[in-house]
Image 1 (spheres, protein in one colour):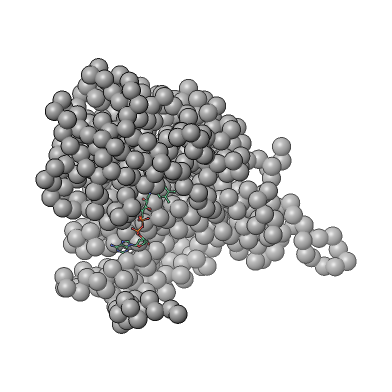
Image 2 (tube, helix red, strand yellow):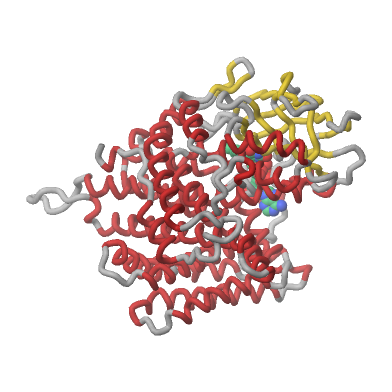
Length: 591
Ligand SMILES: Cc1cc2nc3c(=O)[nH]c(=O)nc-3n(C[C@H](O)[C@H](O)[C@H](O)COP(=O)(O)OP(=O)(O)OC[C@H]3O[C@@H](n4cnc5c(N)ncnc54)[C@H](O)[C@@H]3O)c2cc1C
């Protein structure tokens, strides 16, 4: 099979470079609870994941898109190949990679799981969403569920025998989670009866596992309005007996599977709850806070979707442009597309964006691991806060950037990219939704600016820019890195100006920060990417092709991509998005 015909090419060389040369995993690997893991184990696992992604998941991606999942007689039927792939995925133990060994997991750090997630997602995004929710729900239940429930459910989620969903959205409650109206009434035996309609539920039903555990936000009798009135319930597809064994079919049924732009193999379901049996987890009124343990895992992985699909599209574009012959002097043989300056501009852009995102993914996962393994409480708190700062950037910047990269891949293929045979237009369609779900990118920008930057008086932000400054200082003697260093310093100056302006706003003026938030997040993502290129260039000093490529791409990032921040700084400044001059009626009047 030629490079061009391969369904998926795992980025193993880059992963190895990042984990061996750029990041120091010494404070994570070999430390509790990852005492048995070392770099050889980590790399071996990542290599196996790469093989699995290429051999098992890559081949079902296109058929999943072509056939899709469908509702047949009230049950969802997944496309050909998904059952076998899921069985093999579970048998290989991938679901519980970063979950505790006592529940059947492999107890590896998130930094390894994140690398695996990129490959699983890049090879088949629609498949990847199912095990992701089982992992995320397991983490939540380990932390919050009562022992009987936890011990009955978590090992089965970790083995993949059962799967999970996340049920937040309702017709009137999208971004505005506080409007959830699904009701939970006590049944007098410790369980609850849930009634309401949840929409857009990913893998709300399927034929891949014996049981589905829905994680549902609902409102108890007399609960206050808004998010404070929400509690979290598990609602099984098959009601659980007193011994937690699945029995009768529960009153949780799929009314519809949505027709959508992409991700066709991943069933997006309307789930009707009609007095369905449920069990509260995390205490009354703590639903949203508890659910965040699941949402945070999913937010990083939603960001990884941008990297993963962008990376897969880049690999295809590189292979194609090396082989397709077009252009050159009329009397001479045509040259490969990769020879043309404009095609190279696209390929350089794609690689520079993707490789920076991959480094940022590991940086974020590492902070999440350090929040558990670091020696002192102070270091653990600092790591947790850094992760909190980076997560909305990963979610929104990666998904927007991955989409741009996938779109560039279509451009590299020309008309052959627009037709479906090449498989790149699927990347664009599949990835589009990642900017929408798991908190829209607009909501992420609001979270970054209003809660994380203004809300904590710049503490998390200060640590972020402080760490970048330290790395700039460490490379001050390196003349060969002048370009990327200057770009990072310039970026720091611009983000500092905007954040100072935000922090100076009186509470009544915060709306002008909200208008600039999307540009601020895009600016922060670019500054963080430049920081990653600085760190990669700092160690890429050898003669190998990989190191030469890193040096060149760092220089390209600095010279060609960083100038985008000039505009972003201006757009982010309070008041630049002057969007309040028109009343809603005048703005909406379009006839
Ligand atoms: C394929 C797919 C899978 C999904 N899977 C799940 C799932 O498994 N479980 C689940 O619970 N949900 C799921 N969702 C739902 C998803 O999380 C929501 O679509 C998302 O939260 C946005 O809600 P909405 O669609 O109602 O958009 P709206 O909330 O109506 O937002 C529309 C636009 O307005 C903006 N906006 C809204 N409110 C504000 C505000 N206060 N300030 C500024 N801008 C605002 C948004 O950013 C967005 O651009 C899925 C959706 C899709 C399409």
